[in-house]
Length: 486
Image (cartoon, rainbow, N blue to C red; front, top):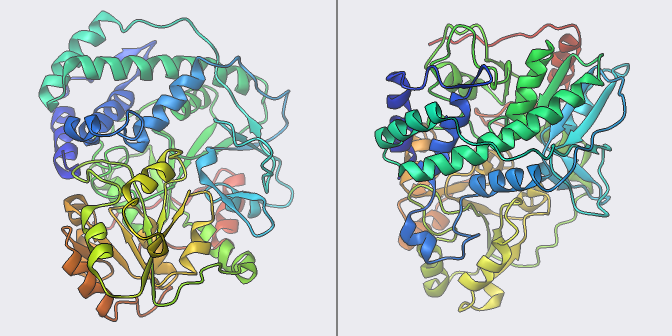
């Protein structure tokens, strides 16, 4: 199912107020249910999944959820001794990027740590382990969830969810299974989060990323119980069809599972979040920008030495998992072009950093093509280092397109989902688009399609100085909330 239809179905069922009273231990679980529906509606078709391995057939978001759930029942509780921090940063290893010195830099939270006031007392945590032996630019502690007995879905929930599943067009058993896993993971993380916060009496603010999985939802609930402010820091595109950010009918008191504040890259993201409830007084956006861009330019880029030896065009393809109507991470039209074109073109296929099976998929998918036409990046390298060494960029609908523009690299989007998600940007010429045609790719490479001004990226603002000012005010509990102008 395409993103537009999936988004519409979720909004329709929410408008019918079927799940208003769906709660677990007095916690409204609609955000948890909404995530289950979103994953199920946007995953690859059964036909595609059966044609691929069971791991590769899952969307990355579902595989991430399964890892979170597996962790919840594989480890004992392990959290640090009593901490004195007033600010905590909680993130995921998938955001780690290698610096020239070999250290790993978290592109979401580390720029904020860099900009913290000199007298601030803070600590950094991860909800999943990073690879053994890897050195982090800013040290962190690993949080692991409690091991609890498996919970049964309450009968009242089961009845409502069967009704919801039929309303949105999902097999009831599928929704019940996914919700059961979600609820169990949430419960185990909630116990861990409560213990963790009990030992941190000074904590006032938590910055986290990707709030809409059970681990972060539990941390948000536990923080709200103790009056601790939670801020979700934007990790990717938050477009008008991203159902975990847009389209919400926010109740007067909000949702316990949803963060207090959304730190957005720019005005567009904030407008998308507010579009359905512009007068909300909770779960509000601020425009904090994406300081990783500015940090890279100021402190990293001058030390980068490109290892690309190819001449001619060099195209970076940022790969995503099968989702919506894009059934192959490497689409047929790129393979057709590689077989037929007489151009001197080298493709660099960059796997998603959260997709360990990506490199093997690429090798299988590209096995019949001459090896000199391509290389495979396992996704652990620094994306920006790659962008500095290429001339063009292709993706289905990854927000890497905005980052590519910031480096003066033109992007070609493909597929019907991209046409819906990036309609405004395609119409105004920021990005090119094809439904999936090798002829379109050939024509695109002939055009002079580099952005006129690499810094003119309206979707993303990036300033370390601005971030420093925001964090100084945040230390005193002051936030400059964005107010919609529409």
